[in-house]
Image (cartoon, rainbow, N blue to C red; front, top):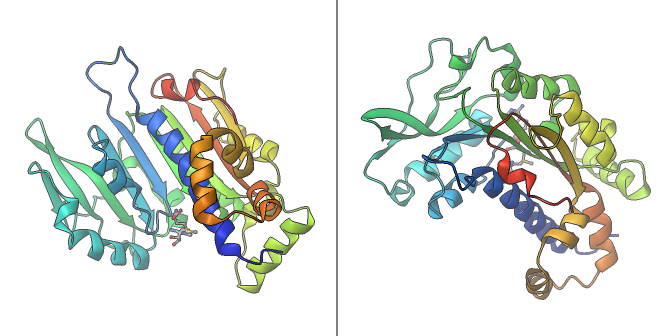
Length: 307
Ligand SMILES: C[S@@+](CC[C@H](N)C(=O)[O-])C[C@H]1O[C@@H](n2cnc3c(N)ncnc32)[C@H](O)[C@@H]1O
């Protein structure tokens, strides 16, 4: 089993990134009638070394966007060095790279200093990218939205967790999401994490993780796509499809149905995905789940077909 795991790993990363790109681009897209364009917000939980914000910038999709990243101080410190030392990352004269945002009035104890990018809007400085060096387990103990630098509660907001909430215990993972959804009116979420713990392959995944001292509580609780959808429903992502709803798909189905055949052939050539059954097995054990709630900001998602 998994003789050359890196092959499946890269194809999995490709498919996950494609799925997230599709969902995020649809979220950021504007309905034809919208004028002026609506400001939107993205909250990336456990962003790690992810460069999505800078990819959006390189495609000029960062205007009217506030982007937050959360991770442990040890992770964000390394990232800040990379970002702050790269002048190319701030290529607009109206923007300023901020090494240390002033701590919010009710900042968290033991919180390191936020850093990011500030932009001038109507003559006033405004946070556009903010990296928060904190342990997410502290979030449910915060009093209000002002405790998070630059957080807005009145704009459509997408929360992203790419393999992050799965490391928290179930109650904390739920409370972190609820902290945001209790404060933000129009809000959606995209989760990417492993599922399918009940079969032989899933058991090997769990024991491999355990042998490295890693526990993923969500893996035991949300074993199927239906479980992931029920989780999103329980978190309040519900509605008639237009103003709310929840969906989930395996990476296998997303690869099959969302990735154009020309791209599949290209990745196949690069990767040499000759061990198709192994790849399918792995891809069946990862899910992307997405939910949304609110009357505006989700128009782009209604047109997305399920895989
Ligand atoms: C598997 S990595 C995924 C990184 C990134 N989302 C990606 O997809 O490339 C999980 C990330 O979650 C972060 N993380 C896990 N538990 C966390 C916590 N309690 N508070 C903040 N970050 C956490 C880790 O530091 C790590 O960067």
